[in-house]
Length: 189
Image (cartoon, rainbow, N blue to C red; front, top):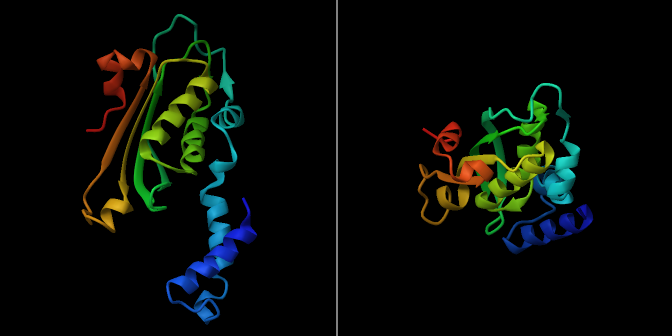
């Protein structure tokens, strides 16, 4: 990430909206924004494969290949930014389930995968697909389901300004595509 370019452009943006970048409250704003973007868009620096490798710690002795039980994590909180308006996607809750095939992910790794995948400019639908792909690779299974519910400030704070709107998306891979009981594990009530 080119923080110097970000600072330059944020100063230009401030001027373009009629602000004085040299006034006391804005003096360090370009640097603060550059630091913030480096943090909240950290996932941009990594491919899905690299995130799977980063958070792919698995355990093999706690599951047999023939078991059909699912691992489910609900209410993982993340936030992201819409690639259309650079608007905040907030109050986002991610539910993830997968069927282990000989190995299971460390539980904290699931939440870390969701968090890192969210740190990109994107659409909620793409975030769900990215999380599912990363979980699939890291856990070595094709059977993954991801649901996401969230608010988008491009809907709640501008445009239509419908503050109560929530967007829900679902991504199903493998057995989750056809098994209604598996879908219920990660459905929102």
